[in-house]
Image: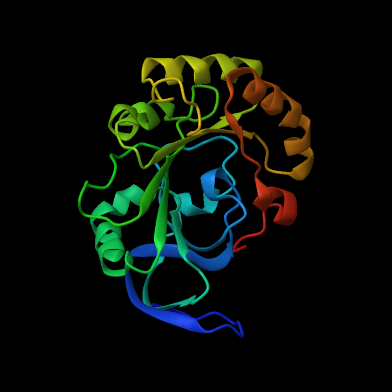
Length: 235
């Protein structure tokens, strides 16, 4: 068991127990996707079946994590991000947590897509942020395509792709067309991020991503955590 109480002068809200294994819990800003730049509290879960070759949180693959007995979150924070690892390993526990606290927060679930979305009607304000991978990106990339159709049918889903090579561009476009991810030609739920674990790597891939977004009308997503903190944990 662990207690997570922030070292902050701000007033905090007591959320009680978190029943799924967490290897990191911290207050920061959302660094990617549709809520980029917003203050957010992060709960990072353990385990992942995809094994991306450039993963910036490989430590989650082996760490067991701990249940949090007492969780405190700043009162000014209105967004909780459950990330990983792969949070949907713990779908039932996360659904219960959202049911308990959904009236006070918006939630984002960052997932590879290896498991299906949360059940409709059992959650409050929840976004699924799905990041499918491809052959040259991850060992078990096919698993991340398993539930794309289910996620695509949900209006609360956004898709976040990592772009590192010219071949990635073709695979991304083919996947978007296959599952009609742009919802009738409107690409405002497709985010494209540059591949990289350092700021130098991000800068090298930046123009490739910008040009791709301009060509198809997708949304460029920075990776602020890499730019500001590199591979530092808990930020």
